[in-house]
Length: 139
Image (cartoon, rainbow, N blue to C red; front, top):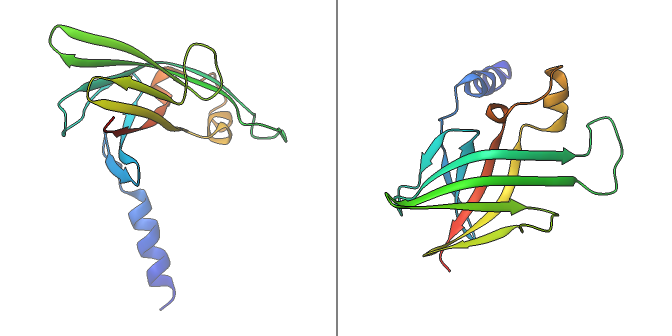
C-alpha cells in the first residue's frame, strides 16, 4: 500500500500548472509572470508583462560564493494610457529587489527554471523559458 501515496504524488506532479498563479506570503500576494505573456492582478487590475531577463546566475555545476545577478524588466499597465517600465534586480545599479508603483510595491521573489534545468535543455535560454515570481503588497 505504500505505492499508492507515491503514485498519487507522481500523478499530481504531472498535472499542468496554471499560466499565471497567484499565491500569498506574509508580505503580500505573489504573481507568477511567464516570459512575454500578460498577467493581470485580479486585486488591482494592473497587467504585468515580463519583457526581459538578464540571467547571470551561478552555473549548476559550479560552487559559487553568491547567486549571481538576476535582472527583470517588467511592463506594468496601470490604466489604458498609463504604462510603466519596472526594473527588479538582486544586484545591479539600475534596479533593486523592490519597486514602487502607485498603490503597490513590487518585490522580486525568484526566477525559474533553475540553472540546472536550463543546462539540461542544451541550448541558450529565451525569454519564454523563464517565469518570474513577484510579490505585490500595499505601500
